[in-house]
Amino acid sequence: MGRHSEKHNIDRIGWLRAAVLGANDGIVSTASLIVGVAAAAAGKPAVLLAGAAGLAAGALSMAAGEYVSVSSQADTESADLAREQAELTDMPEAELRELAGIYEKRGVTPELALEVARQMTAHDALGAHARDELGISEVTTARPLQAAMASAATFAIGAALPLLVAVLVPLSAAGWTVTVASLLSLGLLGAMGASAGGAPVLRAVIRVTFWGAVAMAVTALVGKLFGATL
Image 1 (tube, rainbow, N blue to C red):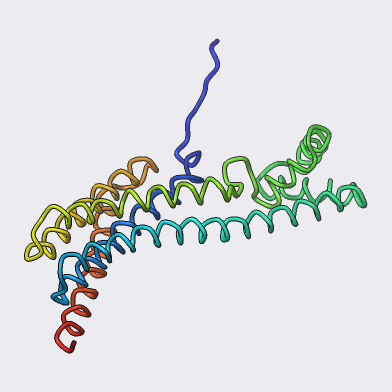
Image 2 (cartoon, helix red, strand yellow):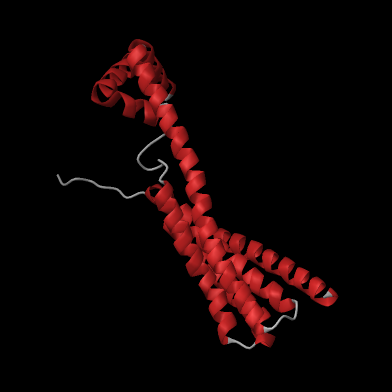
């Protein structure tokens, strides 16, 4: 019989979350900046400068934020693994019973749970406790650099779209064309992210377009108010 291999959507969770977050933020924040500055009746150079600055600052901010955040998660995981390793060295029998108890709670009989715990401990004690006690696995483990690079790259790609639209259209049309193009892009992004993760597409599309529309409407209102008073 041939080997049966499976691909699961959760295998993508490490980069998918950061990529979708980065692209979504890139579109929403840059489009909102452009719409807000355009609504303030600023000149086209000011609108483009705001968009370009938003792209550069946002990409770097996303990279730094993701790296720091995921590094904190990685540090916590490392500390827990070090503690678990010390406990395995100092009190192996207690750790064996603890592992067996975990399997019992999942429906395995006490005798079989103890035997499984013994075999798992003999094979890879720390790996068994990391996975079954701490919930740390190859799929979910923190990867700071991967998250930072994915967020920065996808933010820049997302931000480039409203900026490109603003470059191509006259200032008088920048507000509504950037808004429409950005909402369409957000809908496409939501559909792609949902499809890659195996989630309902329509719900994802509605969610990202709704909040994107809210963000752009608020910044347009702010731009109108401040533009009228300057």
